[in-house]
Structures are given as structure tokens and as C-alpha cells.
Length: 275
Image 1: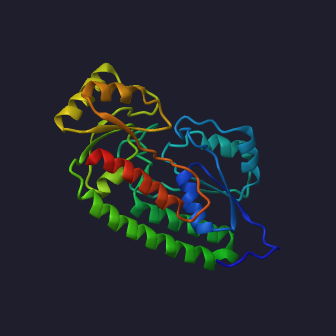
Image 2: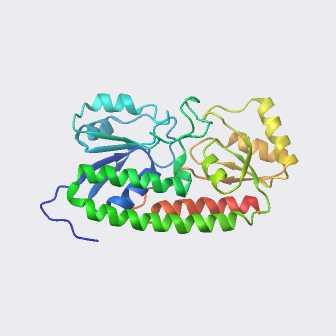
């Protein structure tokens, strides 16, 4: 990786969630300072930006968000920052989204980052945005994009092969985060504990999920660290199965492999339930 000129002022990039941080880091390398808004353990669906983050937005060059109603707080944050130079990149813009959104069903489901093939499209858009904001880094951004795409292709081949070996193809998720992953790799979601994050299922919903767990001979239900696992624990106890954690956000990493490590960690957890 080429060294930056000591006279070069790094781009100031703000992203909403950890997967965006990891993909942006893989493309930007050391040419950008990247700030993540939603901290580990918090849910992007219920988050409230801090005053210091609004102040940072006022001086940033680029803001990258998923959109489709996920960061419902972002527009007000942008308005409060009043930064005329700020470039805003919305990842879901122009993407044909699947149904099953969290905050706004009309918007579609924004969790496209959980599909490594769609993550390639995200990386391309990020690369384009960074090249526009920082033309001097064009060669480096494009080289990093090629590396990212190669890794994503290899991961996709691996996941298709390994998911094809799953003995169980049906699953119960915590909320509708995994539908792009499921569609890509031949899995079937037969129950969702919280269709809207933070809104616990009704007794009728709970019974339907418990019945589905038994009918499809599911061995575990999935919970998430950003949401209460109370309902998942009750369902698991009633159905006589385990609770396994999947993390649709993960952690921000400083290495270019952060996104791929994140997907693989979740896949290993999923494999435990599906075999």
C-alpha cells in the first residue's frame, strides 16, 4: 500500500454501522479517518446520535448509511450538522430490496450487507464515492476494491459449498436481518421472533414459532446481542432447543479483513444450529 504524502489531509468519513466501517476501511486503507456512529452492542434501529457525533458530522467529508428507513435518525442529524460540503452515500439507493423492513415496510429490507455478493456492490459504491471526494487516491481505492472483490468471491464459493451440507435448512431468526443471506445460500426462515426490533412477539406469535421449531425439527433459535433475548429464551425452553447468538452488526476492525471475519464468525455460529 502506497504511503500517504505528509501534506495529505485524510478524508473524514462517518459511517452508521460496523459493517460499513469494515467495508470502507478495506477500500480506504489509511487514506481516511473513519468514525462509526452506532457503538458495539447498540441497535441501529433504536439508536440516538450523541451531540459530539453531530459536531463531527459538521466537519466530515462523507457520510455513509444504509438507508431504507434503518437509520431513521440520520436525516435530522444531517440537518443539524448543517455541513454544505458533506457528501451522503446511501447504500440501498437504487437496489431492489426484499420485503420485510423493520421501521418502514414500504422501504424494503436494508440488511444487504449480510450477503457477500451484495457487499461487492456496496464496496464499489464506496470506492466511487471516495474517488470523487479524493481523486488523488483513485489508484489505491481501485486496487483495494479488486482485493475486496476477490475475497468476496472466494467467500461466496465457500459459503455455498458449506451451506449446501447443512442437515437443517430451516431457521428461526431474532429479526428479519438474514433474508439476503438465506436467499443466497438456500436457507428458509420459518419464524421471526421480533418483526420490529424491540417489539416483543404476542403470545400467539410465540406459540406459532414454537410450533414451527418442533415441526421443522429445528435444533436452535437465533438471538442477537443488540436485542433482548427474553423471548428467544422462552421459545427455546418451550421447544426444548438451544439459543445461539448471531450478530448482524459485528465489530469495527482496523484490518482489511474485518468484513470477512465478521461473516465467517456468524457462519460458524449458524453452522452449529443447522447441523
